[in-house]
Image 1 (cartoon, rainbow, N blue to C red):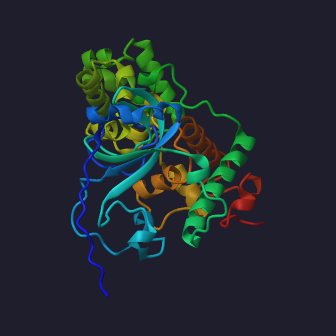
Image 2 (cartoon, one colour; image 1 turned 180 degrees about the vertical axis):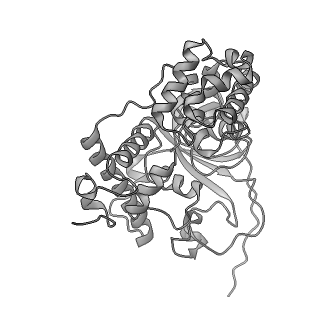
Image 3 (cartoon, one colour; image 1 turned 30 degrees about the vertical axis):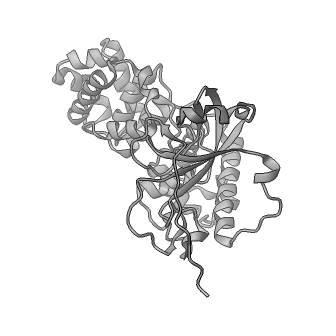
Length: 369
């Protein structure tokens, strides 16, 4: 006997206010949002400020089209095709999102939170306090693909600990300020770092290591100063573009960059002539302090030899390996990437020195002599 489903009406109790205009993959942990509750419901929030975390239910109003009944979790083809309801895919018959977030502050009818994965204007349909014994279930069972994902996290964390034990803190990026980091990120393209240092020293000696100075400097003179790093004519044009953008975007006040969400700032950086994904992410991580993992040739080589490279070898897929399986922490990403660079230069070279590698026992590609 068929049961007739009743009509339902959901009414938003408020909306999300933040700087994120479009849905993005990852990077939500550091996003600060305000949940603006209908003023008529203000009294219903009393007592909520005594909880450190809350559970937010919201309506993902930007989803469209009929959802697929079978999907690969997280959109990764290495995970099995499973039913939609066995995943947390946002494309659902009823696109209800649910996230536990840190409650930073309550001001009247406004809740300030961190980690809400909802874009600006998202309707909020309910709020509940997070209660550990109610929301955490001991002995919960999950399918193997979830365990596999957790296994990757454990491997990445074990690799990091081994690298830290072997090489120690790297204190990277070696620079006297964020603008020097940005300049170095451009100059290091297809160049040895020792030559980048010479080029930066040339700029310092000429008093040209500032956005304003670079804008004033004749292009030919700038190219001459950075000649040691190679491709100096092309890189001079790139530095001019970077300096022009800084003037237009933030009035040369680099401290203002951190106020923008990561996705918006990354799109802005990628719009600059000569700035690709690796350069943009180096600037985001090392100059601005955003939790973005930099993928370079060294990182690709190491994760491939360790058997961690995703089937999709695109920049975004390799970056997701770290973003989805490690805490989203800029300090961790900074050290981890720098340690990978040290390992690649030291022993994990194109012709590897496997017997000297601190990861040899974890590497299926190691060469045994």
